[in-house]
Length: 457
Image 1 (cartoon, rainbow, N blue to C red):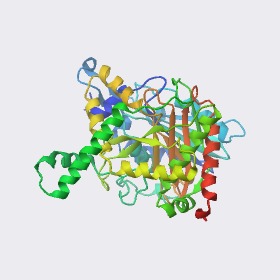
Image 2: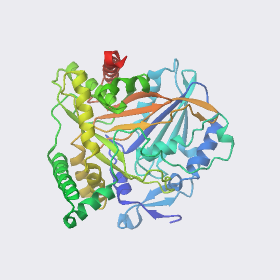
Image 3: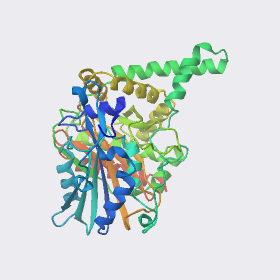
Image 4: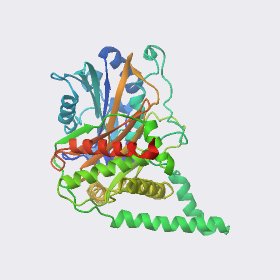
């Protein structure tokens, strides 16, 4: 096997978790106000992604019938053109036409005989174009893949014409806007390991508090469940993708400033209100629903490795969908997220994912389904560039990306900021949530209510 290397335990777990109703594919969308030079764009893709990260030229194989686990091996017939599709939207080429195209693709499995990724170059969108990228979760987690895709962009229109092979270094954790910021799992686990041997009063108190938090996390992971809701059901194959308009980050920041709430606290509160409105529209009684939130556990400032891979944790965030007042919902969103930020939950779930990945597929799949069943889906926050960016000389107008749901999950949410604007996208199961436009309508109304509050002026 030329260039073969074994998949990491977590990467192998995601490779085996595909099922027709929930594919393990990270779907990303980038659009432009003007047409792109596709040849120039593909040259950038080849230099900055395919040549930089070997996994984009490798396919997954199972030697000896899978006895040794899956391996990545070089695809002897690799050609960039085999991973690129061209399409043109029908007139008028508006958001609805682009959404229909994306929806037709996101339920289609990737070809397992080739490297597990593809790009769709889409003409005819609002006089410009769009790029849909689909990467299997076994290649890397969504946090890393966002960095990979952003490496296609430049600060100037001619940036791709210069020598640009620089290391992909994530933003420093202290300056990165993210849903959660937690200590590294290693630090927390070392604290637990060292606890019995310390006599310092403060350290002992910290260890005792950590033990209590760990029990709380274990209770949430093992006993937590979602109530019955119109947003919960048996997922089918078809998915819907919709997105909101953009809102300036500065306006959202003003909403949260008086209470110390972050931009993400406000957005999570608005998403919670939108979900509650959807439940009411369908005759249900809003109650708190739980979503999963990915947390990056890489060391800050360290370049992404050439092998990529998955290195993230998932934490359970109970959304205050059962809280009626918008202000109370905002306060509760902040409180719950503050609790998770100092919790060892990310460390626990990171270790748990590694342990599950080392089990046999017959055991790992039901275990993943068990924990996935604690949430309606996954909510991601992608802090994109604050300044305008260009791909192959053309300015990026906007972007979104959705990580996959697992098991019976039905609602994925993406919060994406770019050029000091923020947008929220929903990817939902079409059978369970057939009218996601109502989610967007409710989210826009909820956020507008926050922006109209007196303290937001």
